[in-house]
Image (cartoon, rainbow, N blue to C red):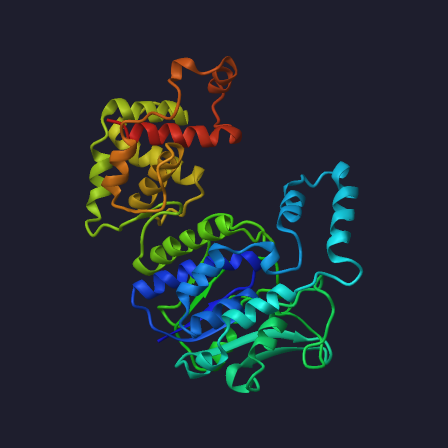
Length: 399
């Protein structure tokens, strides 16, 4: 049984839902969920067994569903570049939205009333806990469902997500602050409950995150493979994109898929990658030596003694990483440059087939005069590293 920990992060929290879909599909049993802010809100819907409704909510999310504003006005404001010339206008617009007391979160309260079913959550077999800060008593509050008075769960969920720019008000006579200002990833709540296997879902949003020290060999941290957008970007299209990313990032962690950007099935035959390198001809090895500005030598031996170590160094890859890690990285870079769809699970050969016939770097005869001057210097310019990596990938993964 696993404990699930959901990090706070506002609109970035849509990522949680994709990860949870992967957990369900892989048959991972969750016996406890804790979260902060949006992590608490998503966690409540997970505990009550409402993945589909939660997905539906995120798919149509908008600013006006969280705060009392006009969506079109907010969207125009968000599109403005944060430069000095725009600051006066932005300041006036924000002031018109929040008035003197802060954003009106009446829509958020209505969402909680509509989507949170306290009775179902209390009947769930999953444990559930949240984090908030009790400003009235100046103390953080880690609290599990059994310690929350009946009928008040929505109040505590709101307290966990209460940001400073919301209209100041009391919840049951007390003031609260978003729990992310104290502990945005409250995994220790489950450790104290005796959980050994944890799944932490990150958003990397601003907030206080304690140093992560996980017990158990099967504990894992699932993090977004690319930018999730801004914490205040309440947009259904962005949310669905984040959910898809969370789903595939979750599958990567659970299935041990290879890759950082793509999702590549691991191979059982480790010799496959070595054989691929051994099949490289003398011409290709010579081309790579020229690009990396390496001295002449016996080509086949030079591949393993000079070229590959140089690539590991350029990519800041640990030398303990195997040939497969290096080749997967290079294949990913070429696939990305070829605009190959990343949201699919590939075998190495499938992804290779999609890029093998495409060339992404100009012929070396066409390089600029400035590049020719650089070529005469026996160093690899930092600003040209990306092109060099792509050129190496072109050579290795071409017919």
